[in-house]
Image (cartoon, rainbow, N blue to C red):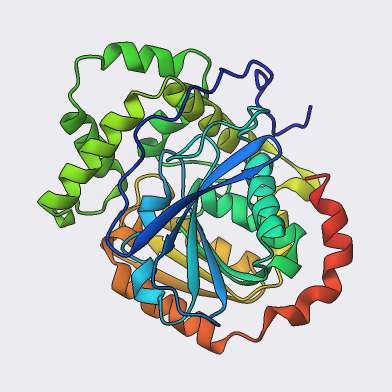
Length: 337
């Protein structure tokens, strides 16, 4: 068992038959991709232009591919974008091995890119997804043209106090206790609590988007594996924070060859903006965008601003195929991460 694997990962709950799926927005399609031991839901733009370079968007803990629905159309003239539901999130069922470590999620992304043949891609990740795609870019540079990290969950020695309750989900039994304590909460209240944690200004959420978020939260609460996935996902982040040596996420950030855009929110309650300068120093070819009013999900709060920054990154980046010379050693590392 790897040091990033959940200690109870062998006790995998059975996957029930698929229930009602998540919302599919205007101009979107959602399809299911089956790989050995893994099924992934993939969201895309229905009117994708042929010949554009591919992009892949990866969400954070508790999120889904819907987190990218505001950003994807703004980049549709630059990239052929797809957004994954990571294993156990959104419309993707839990993986057969029950592995929600950052390495396990990175392997899921790598397996999808290898199977689809879409690499190298413009790779975009938020929070937990940002940590996973950092690992992807470090071990498989041949798959990555550019890297965009929005509030990436890279290790902090002293996390913000407001982030500690989320980290506590990793403690055995904590999620079950929280579920019992909040059993009388309505989906509306649960959604407001999440928005207050993730948004710099929750009033930016329109009434239509709030209603959709409530419906999605209610749908997820019906899934018998919801709290188990949240627990294992949180544990995966905490475990990744403690890793040393070559598997430490900061060490892997230093190995990333792709041009990198870092986006941090000044009002982020989960990933401190004070980590922005450290990240800018760690990634060798990086640029930094700090949004003072944004929280943890800048691509949902300020999609136009984030899209402009990604456009600039894409337009100015050399073709990452020039990096494939480093892929031989990195590919071998992928199996050990």
